[in-house]
Image (cartoon, rainbow, N blue to C red):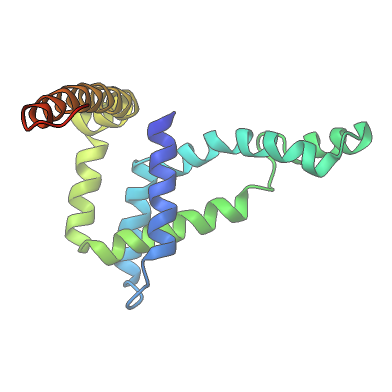
Length: 162
């Protein structure tokens, strides 16, 4: 799940931080939209929506059962409440891809992710990202512990009392 959150956060950060220089061509946008679909970015967003809506529920419904029932119906899976945001996100992310890559590059990237190795990578990427984060944390902690000891030892040799 953290890989998905990182992907969404990264995509949103790109949207906020990157100013668009010029509009991509329709061909580039079409290729970029295909890539976004292949990468299943919208699916990742859809998976996060229930959590978001669950957090919003008490704020909106204010512990009133009649509002909670209507809220649940309005936000049920498949509700059209998501559609405009999903479309806007897809278009904006596609525009960033279209600005960053040529049409040919977009097609090559899509071909990779549509193939067996790319699909497997997409399936495993969340798990691998979590494992990499854990390894980084473990190694970072080990390095911090060992460096702390070495620095303390060196400072003591120079006469400092620690």
